[in-house]
Amino acid sequence: MSAPGLRQVLPSSSQAVIEKLPGREDVDRVNQQIRSFVADRPVMAVLMALTAGYVFGRIISRVS
Image 1 (tube, rainbow, N blue to C red):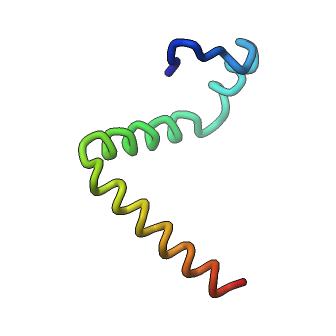
Image 2 (tube, rainbow, N blue to C red):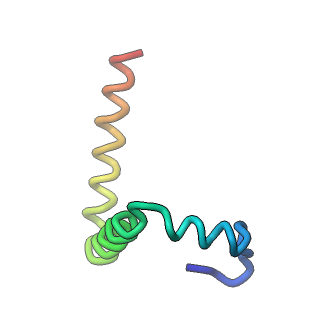
């Protein structure tokens, strides 16, 4: 995924190493599932993110 005006941060050799890491296919699959969920249900995705942030904030405020 590249946008106009953005440059490649990693050299091509580093990119090749990253693409060969174990579990890369699983991460790509989960990434695609999340992207399709957000594209199909944007309001639900925002509500889930807000709820998770609220719950996480409550847990952290109790711990510290």
